[in-house]
Structures are given as structure tokens and as C-alpha cells.
Length: 302
Length: 137
Image 1 (cartoon, helix red, strand yellow):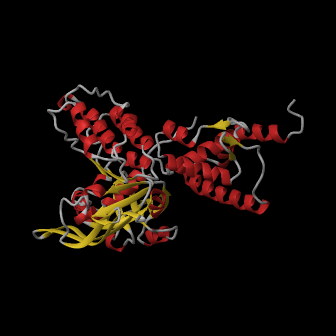
Image 2 (cartoon, one colour; image 1 turned 135 degrees about the horizontal axis):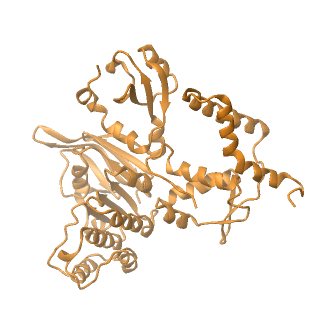
Image 3 (cartoon, one colour; image 1 turned 180 degrees about the vertical axis):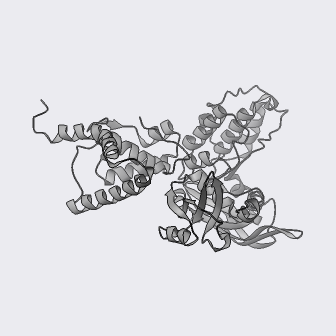
């Protein structure tokens, strides 16, 4: 058994003149919940399509559960659960017909796991799938994916469009129905509060490349926020590790990567007064990181 | 029992450790109180069970809680496991942190000291209670 659920090496996917994945090398260890974060167009969907064998890489290779993802056997494919944001299911079937079909597809179908998840949702077996609410469809999708007894469960924006209650029920089912030693979860989301609760490690994709892979805590430790007063402007291109700057009233806020206490002197050398380090939470740290290549175009510092 | 918030500068793991440590220090959680299971607390807080397990491991290594096999997790009797030098070092570190955070806020020293006393009040009565030999009767 491979120690990694997902391995990619030098992976490229090129569409015309655009590279959706660019030299992506990712080694995701077995076990736990890994969050996958990236701006729109960072290459998440392309990566999933390649991993599931739906699409083939232009250059490079990828393995899932130790097997080349281009030659997945039905058996290995059955060990990968997949829940996406669409929650598209055949609307004309009843819940019972759909579940019967899935049960017949998967040899390792775990009825207990299915019931454990579905009981949190108000889904009746005689209901037409088309009559279910978005939250109920999400629940049904998750229950069926869990029942596959997957070794790898990929969730792509699963709570998108769910209301607060449905979201909570969904997360609860996810966190407590799965045995996270047996089943590795890749959780793809833009909801930082969910990621903070659910995930142990954080993968950041940026323009088709792997930008960061660490625990949530060590990622947060790398990002620091500074408040300062300033008369002139800051020479943005000379600030080490700059992620984001913003002006709030008379204060300038600077978010940087991998800077220690000495950064205060750097700021002071640019004429900054009353420099203070301010606490920064996970959501802001990630957002600043994802925005880092936009600071030149989005913000004008006078 | 404890609250956690997302978006806080402290990671959730740290919030759980701090929250329980405070409750134990103030005596709100008395020695031999049974804590929720890892899964139970994770469900209450809606967080990953591994995060709670990590927090429990940290508190166990600090000697604040212990796992009794097949019974559960319990609050320990208070005891000082750190050396005097280490206690001194940690106190100094915490003080420096605190001072650098409040120095520019414009409160005068007396006011800050008063506020610190108020915050320490619940902890103080607890320590007096456990150390005083029979006085509490």
C-alpha cells in the first residue's frame, strides 16, 4: 500500500496556449483531512479530472492510491469517492432506485455507513431525487460516497449554496461518519471557517503550481500583519515577502510572509512610524496569500 | 463548556488548550472531573477530532489532564511539573508579550495593574484554596 493517496510529478496540462497545471508536484500522505485551496482557475478541477482518469496530462504523471491515474481499474476507481458542488443526480429516479443502483455497483458497499450519514438528512426512500432540496441532495451524495468505503474521498466545494443548517449537518456527517485513518479526505473549499474546523493540512494551488503545503498552524505562523503610520509611500517592490497592503484610516496595514521581528526595522527604514505587529487569523492569512500577486494591480499606494 | 471561534488569530487547537487550561486553573473544572471524550468534544465544537486529540495530548504532557484506560479523560490533581527556572522563563516571556501589546494603548500603569488583578482574581482564590493547609475550612 502506497504511503501517499495522491502523487503527481512534473504534471502539466496545457489547453491551447494556456497551462492549467504547470509543473505540479504534490505528494499527499495517507490519512487525515487535507484542505485544497486556490483562486478560481488555480487548476483544482483540472487536477481532479486527471486524478480520476477523466482527462490525461500533457506532460508528467500522477498516481492515485499507488496506481497510475490513467490506468485506474474499476476496483481502484471504486475506492475513490467524489462529491462535487453540483450535486447532480438523476432527477427522475427515486432515492431508493438510485441507492439500489449504487449498491449494485460497489462490491464494498457499506450499508451502515450509508445509514449513518443519511439519517442526518430528511430524505425518504420513495422521494424523487428531483424533489430533494440542495442540502438533501448534498447529504445523499455524501452518504453514497461514504458507503463506497472510499480510501480517498474528494469533496469539491461540497457546501456551496447550502444554508447554515444544511452546512452544519453536512460537516458533522463528514467529520464524524468517516474514520480518517481509513479514509483520506481532500476538501476543496473557499470557506475558510469550514477549512479551519475540518482540515489538518493545507495545500495551496496557484496558477497550476503547488504554492504551499503545510499544517494549518505552520501556515499561520508564516504570515504576519503589521500596522504603521506613514507619510509617504512604501516602495512595494523592496518589501520582503509582501503579500498585501491596505490603508485603513490613517494606518497602513502590511501583510507579509516569512518575516520575523526584524521586519519592524525594515519598515522603519522606509519612514514608517509607530510600527506594531497585529494578530492575524487563518482566513485573512490565506486571503492575503492568495492575493499576493494582485497587490500591484489592485492597490494604489500614494 | 469551552467556546472556539473561527477567524481568531489563535488556531483552534490553541484555543482548546487555552480554554481548558484556564478552566482548570480557575477551578471551574475541578480535579477528577471527567472531560468529554475526544469525539464528544469534537462534536460539541464541530471540529476535527484529531485537533481535539492534539489538544488533549498537549494538556496531558503539561500534566493537567490524564487518560484513565477505558474510563475516560480526567482533570489531574494540581502539581507543579515545571522547574523553577522554566517557570521563571515562561513568566518572563508572557510578561514581555503582554507589555509590548499594552504599552502603546495609552492606559496608565495603575489602571493596567488593576485590570490584571481583576483577571487573576478567580485564579488566585483557587490557588489559595489548594495551598492553604486547612485554612479553607
